[in-house]
Length: 319
Length: 319
Image 1 (cartoon, rainbow over the protein chains, first blue to last red):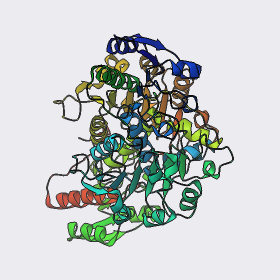
Image 2: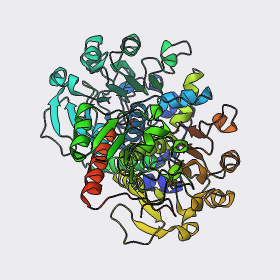
Image 3: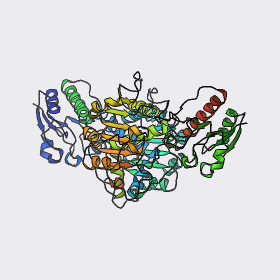
Image 4: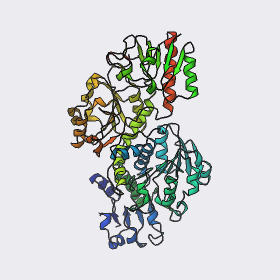
């Protein structure tokens, strides 16, 4: 009988029941990720949920590892997992929460609400003048996976013209007005009123937004990053915002997290800092979606069916 | 030959040309509202744009007064205008800017962005937990005029279920899922996740949101006011927010404007204060829409055609 370790957080009874039914032929143990030991991992044939990567050490016996997270970057590094382990993510479950966070940040900056909130703290009745709108704006979504596509649909619903940029060639999906490959980004960067980036963390996307790319954007452009922090070097972002290369930015992910208290980014008026808060289970609907993916994939794994969201160890992306 | 005084702000040459063509048979003079004297008003047969109400004194010769604003409350008070003057507003021109401001404020509060901005000022990496969404939320739009309808469409595009409340009976417009009369509001108040109020300033709507009405709302409810400040007494709003009767509010209009520096409202963490900034010409598209309405109505007045947005002096509303 296979042993399944479940570390998914915030489960209710219905969620547990659903997972138990999917793994009816196995023994299932529920633990909090923070309480997991190396021995717990060594005795598990299957893990549902994230565990600290440092505890893994490429366990021989781990057949199937279904993450509760959308990203897998911490688990594809060398020595963390045995290459024979089937690794899958819960990408898709987080699309709504991340995309809605990004949309709220976009509107907040376009409407200068960050400046109004600051003025409120000073008890100051100041009018900051002209505001922007998504209606008729050109929105560039860099990284057109599930989150990017969700955001694209929201932005279009509010009147935006959406250009999608993705790594791999495909037919243009309905959620965008134009589609380009990542290689072609520099040809469209200067058209964007909003650049919304949701690149995953991988070697190819490290420091993707160079000083040149920020210079290529409109000075009125708004930049949003809800992907991974390593896509932008802190000092490059700071210089672009201080130098007026772009108008404002909202960033939820940083090269170093938590963002150190002495980081100059905190004090930039035209930067909205949020503490990697767009995802997780902050939207109550998310946990149910994670459980759905985990139960579906567990059942598929045990019955030899098709597993979704399988990670390619070489690229760190979905296969 | 009739004399037309134009005080509309931020006109470009194309706007002036359009107004001149609409009033080709008249003499047209352009002035800034702040430079207008009683003598200027006395010599005008027609005014396009707002002038200080205190200067008016019910001028006998003023035939047609086309405001550049959406509201007319300052002009329907006794002694300001002669009841024979035809008074019209530019309502409709401001729908987009006000509705989009209200939407940005709604999302900002649902996603706790006001708390994240405050934490940023303290260089503090703090997670504020669960957030809300418009997707599946019940949004109550109180005052279903052009702004309210615009907001309703935006909210529905993001997945909300919209209930409209209006003063006068009509068929349910497509922008709402349910429609009620103002008298029926108390029957639906407890269903709302968001109450978005855009009531005009009139005697009937003064202190419309009583302590009882805030108590009737869900404790998780978000309240937005972009109508007129007198719809909510400051102390009632403060008590509702401090007492947790509702979760948070965003208010752009106040009983006293500017909001006095010593008002306790400034310091409420769960209140977003903006300085009556949702309207005006903050969205560049707005001025063109105001000019369109003014030119259209001027031509209609001069040719005996139908004037839109005529104000009823008795109610302060559109006739």
